[in-house]
Length: 520
Image (cartoon, rainbow, N blue to C red; front, side, top):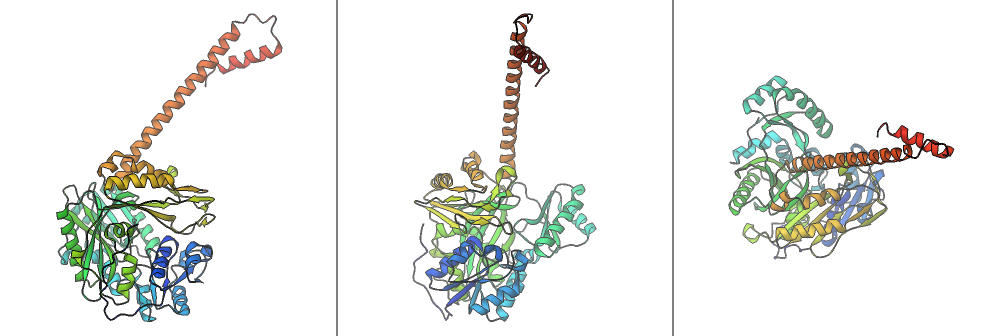
């Protein structure tokens, strides 16, 4: 794939790391380990009992056990992760994404132990991680926001009043949320109480925080995000946009860059807005601002993710910037080695998130042993994987097993390359989302770039209904054919005579055929 930018680096007073602990697992841990190896930095892995034989453990320079399989007793256990970091002699901690990556208390604990947290400052995570606080900062920075509440509300009567003021449909959202958790679409006042209860319960389980706020639901929006980088020297840039509208249950499954919707003017506007907010809050490192864009191409700030995104490879492929290495260099105190004018989008990149899920069973997780694995390769193909043949996909964690990324000179080239790559990708022993991608990549609306966040539900619900209708017709035709065959056979038996010279076998067949005439 296309390499990272090779312009001369501008190095400021910095502290070069010798060893980094990666507080994560799976494909993102593998991704960070590989970046460390290329930078000649030793990588320390952590693992739960379920991950003792995981790929990231095998690839790391050293690995340390941090507890039983449940996340709360291992990857989410702050003290155990910190103990591993200190014991290993690591100078810095890379959190990846998920788990502790947006946990301000963890970032603060790293700082207190003299460890460099490879990400923003703990106070910035607190500020931007609280969704309503982030909305207030965005408003102050001049960003348009979706109409809604600027504070989380605990009283259901107050939420009902605000929903009526905003106007249905509304989105119920967890104040500390992310990844589509604690989020519900509410179409009427009658639906609000149950939606609030479900959202609160989900938010409490996912984030330990059940505070809720409301936003006006934008009909058929596009989900567009802007990647940003900022250093300790006052430099802040954006690395253009990613299209993330192909989602199921508010979770992204296919991302691409550039967006087929975004014009040069809209790109410039959204990038300028993103940098304005980054500078206002004193952001440090890599981050992403998420926007909803309506049918008239009006962008509305949604939230900020204060970490590396799952879909960061598509930005790397079109800009040539290695975002993981950029994170590490910024954390070491180095200045960005390029400015906004140095960046451009070249070609088109698409990412498919390959999950151990069964698309034919409502995307239910499909854990189990990978009996055979053949990954695609060839020009313009990249597979960021965290598994191997023979690996047992555990039930305890997110079922993402790999990110399949392609690059092409044009969007149509990238689509054709991804179709080829998905066809080459073979996994036996578990179900994956690969068949789902084959359907999406050939859907006329996707090929035309005419998509929005409701695409999966709308397009595939209709396809599934058509398939169900076709199956019903096939069953009815088969039943009619069987019935006709049985009736003809019974009629032939009746015409064969009075039975004077028939055998017992013939009489038994006649009685059976006559019994069949009762129907199918």
